[in-house]
Image (tube, rainbow, N blue to C red):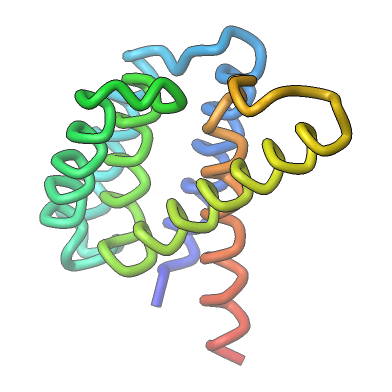
Length: 146
């Protein structure tokens, strides 16, 4: 169960990260550091997922490998943002949010290619799609509590 305070902070944080990614095509390090600090405080207070730190480490390793093998769709800020998401939501919810986000981005790319509004090489800011994943995970959590 995701705590309401974590839900609210996650949504605000992802909104700011998405805005930055859309506007500047980057997620600034101070924003990432703030997310990590907030996530660690939530973890220390027992409000975030109990496996948050382990999830963040695992997600970092996986995303860093993808980044290192030069998957050009993934930038350094995306790697760090994925770590913050895992820290906030834990392993299961974090991975599920990322899977939904990457899937939504892929669908957007395919649709834009079919509609001739882009090519398979068109780069999209990934943070808004990660935000979609976070929103879906939070909505799922709320619906499961009803």
